[in-house]
Image (tube, rainbow, N blue to C red; front, top):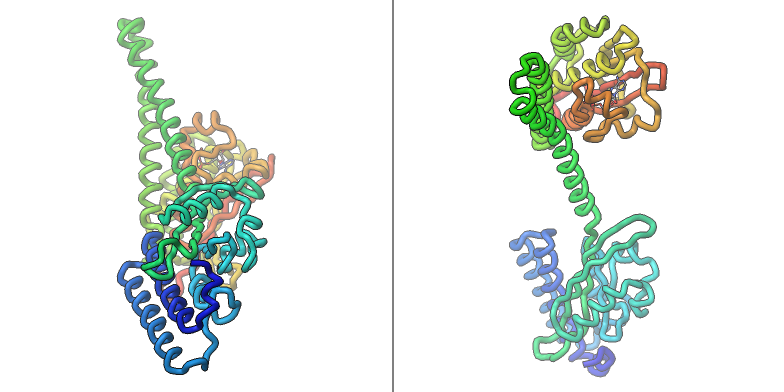
Length: 427
Ligand code: ADP
């Protein structure tokens, strides 16, 4: 059946239109259930409402003969197909047997601005995979899937589903194809990040593991009876084992914090004793490095927080200042109340060292997992490359943020901003 034949008989056309709306709604709700946008129960309820509306429209149309203009696919206004398509969240294009656009929604328009009603879809969508999928859907009467990617202006990946739609069950061929595009880019990016993360973590673990295996072989072989060498190697092996333990500990902390990321801590907590506890715990390291740590505190400075996580956060910052800024011989910590950009009260804690500082190109990347300015120095200092990533995740969970000010030769200041405890936060 061609779409033009419809114009011949208004009554029949109206009936077909209602059937088309109901068939479209069935397909649309099925797509939403398959793509996880809607649960099955909502989809069934939604479909029932559309089907009822279609049925009623048909009845009213029959009762008031000629009163309302009959629906036709080519009419630009009051087109139920367009109404349904325009309400869908993913890019959707309805295409007729001649390959022309019957309906499209805003997400589809944003993706391919050249798409126009009534014009061939192949003019605007220059992906052969898509056009072929639409052709196959018409020819075989079955849903077709295709994946394609765009390289310009940025890498993006899409999955296209071309679903043939018949207006009536008794027609042999599909009257149109609903082309739904799903943006897979965020999914791909997460997959890439996960793969990178696993590769980095494995690499970090493999290095000390290789050292341990090497020393074990040496102790079993050439150095079997060399007491002096054995003592030396055992000390190195112990350090490597500690490094692996630190890494595993940091990885577990990261995943635990990520798991709880959506649950904002709601216990009011004073930051003063936390910072003091951290500084006391790092006294040995400070002494070893010849660094004096000064703390300048306000009275009570209360935030909603998780005690252990906040201890971990300040431990990382103060330890970094001691490790990387030792040359300055001094670390200053200052706790002060302040005001955030949105006017809300906040607590700020700055950790300032007077070491060699950090070049500006590194600053935006410091909180990435395993990012280090100097890998060798970080390893020599017992670093895992995860400290500032942990800081960032803890702050995200606390709805806080980190700012870093530094210039080569001028030391570094890491400033933690946390919303001050007002009324209890909502999740
Ligand atoms: P690491 O375990 O290597 O210390 P972090 O995530 O804590 O990992 O820090 C990432 C990198 O940031 C460090 O390797 C170091 O190069 C740099 N860095 C962190 N704090 C400072 C600081 N206070 N001064 C200079 N560089 C720093």
